Length: 565
Image (cartoon, rainbow, N blue to C red; front, side):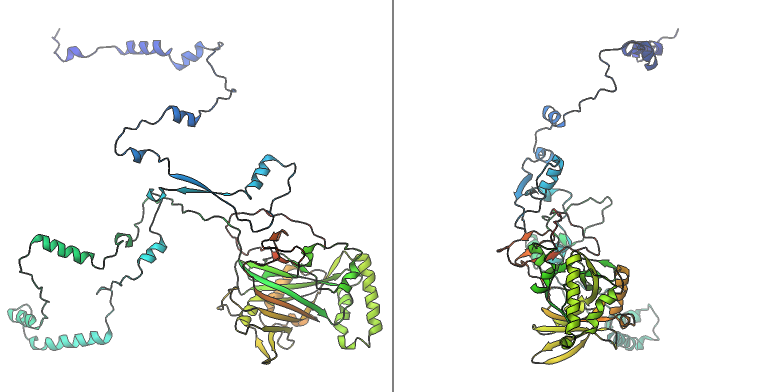
C-alpha cells in the first residue's frame, strides 16, 4: 500500500451514505416518509387551514427591532428625519351661507364620513426636505425662461446666413486678388508669398512676452470669468434625457370649485301684441359644433300680477327662487358655436299648437278696439283652461341668439348699447340694430369669423330687444332639429323662411358677471355670500354641462331641492 502524503491525511473521508443517514436522523427522513408516518395522527402544534392567523403588527415589529445603524457622520443620511413632515389644517372656504350637506338622519356611518369630507378643514402636508429628494426638479420651464431673461443671444458664424450682396463682393475681391497668380503653379513658393502678402494680419496680443507672477495671472483670469457671469450658469443647461425617468409629483393647489367664464343675463320684459294668458320662458346654452346642451334650463316669469292671478288656484305660495329674473351662466370652453336658446310655453289647452298660436299672429295691438269682443272671448277661454289645466304646459314658440356675435358687437360699441334683433325675411339671416337717441339707428350685419376672440370677460354690457319668435311646429322640438336650425342661422338659408314668425318683444341685458354678486343662489338653491336680505329677488347660478371633460376634484356636495312653480 502506497504511503499517504501529508496534505491527504487531513482530508475527511466521510462516506456519502453516512451523511444521508445523519441528515435523515435530524430531520425525520424524507418529506414523503414524514407524511406517511403522520397519517392518522394529529399534533397539538399543527395549525388547521381554516383558522385565521393574526398578521404581524408592523409598527410593533419596527419598535422592537430597530434598524442597526452604525454611529458616524453619515448616520443622518440613512435615518428618516423626524421633522420632515408638517401637517397644517387650513379652514375650508365656504362660499354659501349654509354648507351644502344633506340633512342629518339615519344614515350609514360610511355615508356620514363621506359627507364630512365636504366640510372638514383642509389638511396640508408640507415636506421640509422635499427639495433634497430625487423626485424634486427645480429646473422647471418657467424658471428656465426666467433665468434666460436678459442674456445676450449667442450667434456663431456657422449659424449666420451670408448676405447675398456681401457674399458677392467677397467673391469679386477674391477674384481680383487671384488674377495676378493665374499663371503661378499651385503650391509653389511664389504662390505662398502672394497669399502671405494678401492675408490680413491677426490682432496683436498685448503684454504677451511680459513677465508676471502666476498669482497675478490667476487673479486676472478669475476677474474676467466673474465679469458679467450668470449666477446660475449650470442651471441654464437643459436637463439630459433620463434612461429611467423618475415620476415627479408637483405640490398640488388647494382644491376649489370650478367656474368657467361667467355671463350675466337679465330678463327685463316680455310683451306680445295681445295679452290674454300667462306665457312662461326659459333660457339654455347650446353648442352647435359639439351638438350638446351645455347648461341647464333657467325658467323665469315676466307675467304681470293680473295675468298671474289666473293661476292662483294652482299656486298658493311661490318660493323665492322662482321669482328670479337674472341668471349667471358659466362657460368653460367659449367658442363661436354657442347659442342662447329661448323657449316659450303656455298653459295646456285644447287644440293644435298652430290653432293656439294663430291669435298672436293675426291680432295686432293697434286693432285692439276693433277686435275687443274676440279678445274678450279668447281671454275667457284662457281663464277656463288655466283653472282646469293650470299645472300643465305646452310648447309655444322659440328663438335663439348667437352669443359671440352679441359679445363682439357690444365690445365695439359704446357702453349704453341697445341691440334690436329681428328676422329678415329677404336674406333669411339675423341682423342687429343699435338704437341711440344721439346717433339714430343703424344696422350691423352679423359676422361669424372664427378668428374673433372668444373671451366673455371684457365686453361692454348690452341690452337686446328680440322682436320675433319662431312658432313651434310640432308637439316637441327635438335636439336634432334644433341643432339644424341653429346651424342655418349662421348662414342665409331657406329653412328658416318656412317657419312662421310670432311678433313679440323680449328685452335682455347681457354683461360679464361680477366677481361677488349680491343676492345669488347656487344651482342647489343655496344662498351665496353676501346675501343681506332674503326677501330680495335673487339671481340664479345655472349649472354648466361642459362640452369637454373638466378634470377637477369634487369639492362641494350637490343635491336637488324641489320648488313650487
